[in-house]
Length: 195
Image 1 (cartoon, rainbow, N blue to C red):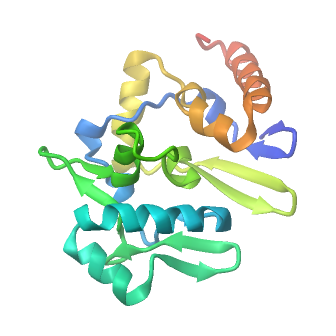
Image 2: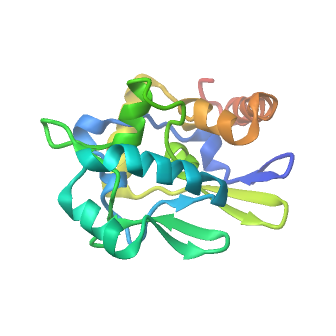
């Protein structure tokens, strides 16, 4: 296990190769699962604002679901985004080739918002479990969802740690990320990998 300050990460995060390949996986991480994306309490007001702005453009099923059961599920620290039929995020939209995309992220790229998406979505395929003042981070490898990204990472020599620079920096800050990356590269050298 890698320890960077109060964040503990599984070793495979340092050595795994990964780069999202949406044209192959079709955005499965946004439409599959048994629950909605975890969200922080501080993200709820932003998500409500995003819903108000984006819901007119989203699927009727998503709008109906949110009207009936609300945008956020759970209570306290265990909050998650609403889903349609227990899997598809209510913020999903599809491009012309059937790829599931995040409407919040599209709005971000179009400069309609300064907020890219929930941190848990940005960090995926990493999952964070909080315990006291510490975070425990694991690479949630789901073969039929993640293998296209792992294949692309291997082909293009892109490591997961570098691919997720932006969300990891967002989560823990630039100094933390530099320290984390240095440790990842040391591990790769020890294992005889190309850094």
